[in-house]
Image 1: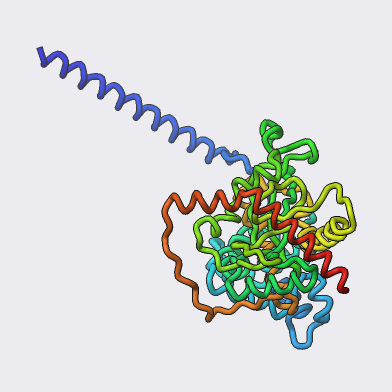
Image 2 (image 1 turned 135 degrees about the horizontal axis):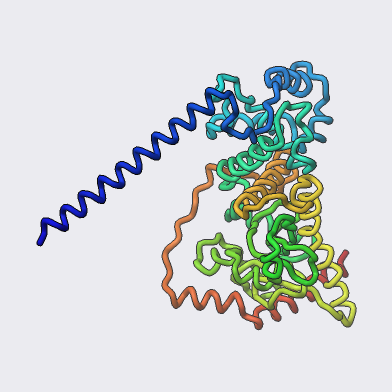
Length: 420
């Protein structure tokens, strides 16, 4: 019984093998005929390769901005690169040392690649001006596609190298400095900064996602940036990636801004106001935010001199975050105009890179309230149980503490205004 089955299987394999040999023979004969006739068997779809002089572009860039002496002054460099020459060279050397893609190499055709100077310059210029990607082709001898690659890899490198320092949580000493500065400037005792959200339009968002990423007050699909800034416009917190169809409350619920307080890993920010002890500092916000003990809002209809004085001080202090957004968008036009990225990951890296560069420029200009101290020891925190986490979350969302804090601030600011 088994012999016929075996014979049938063997004949089937021989038939398939003969068919394959016949097909291969036919393909070889066809290729040979095409070669003999001289006709092209491949449709050329790639663009014609341009003979760009990369070495000459590098030398021109070095003579214009980095030679001694150079053509353009330090002031003109700062205008076009958005930062000082010293800061730019520091970033360039760090990236060249840590990211192999930015080092100058030889490509598959034996040609010398673009220099680190050209790649970083292309990324900075595109992020600063956000024009057509091939605008700098004549000067840097770099195609638009390669410039976009420089932007994506440069932003990823900035986040990788500098996020731990320039997008850090404030330490205990920095908390004291921030609270003292805000109390002196605006009279808000215990204040750590202001919090708010802004949108980045997503131009290439697919139509099927339009309802998911857009909302009524913004005509285009967008992604929201939640940020927290202090009086010197330093960003202490940035949370980017929530669809623009959400409001500020939805973003706050997804944000890790209060996680350190909930897990008791944040430095001590307690303060005393009019004889009342408050366990945590607070942020200024607008009226849409919830009545949390760590959020102080303005008054929609202030009645009386005290409340009017408080509202005026609150509006003046909360403009810090709006000014920070304005400076960020005016310095890096790429976040002020519709994004040309299809990937949310690339958008996220670009946004965080712009925030980090913003903080680096503030520090380089000597405008930051707090200076980074790498020798400051990180405090040791004990793990807490789930019951403690729930109590901390409940305290943060306490409306009673929020109302008591607002009342004490109204009285404190009125007294300060009367004394002045």
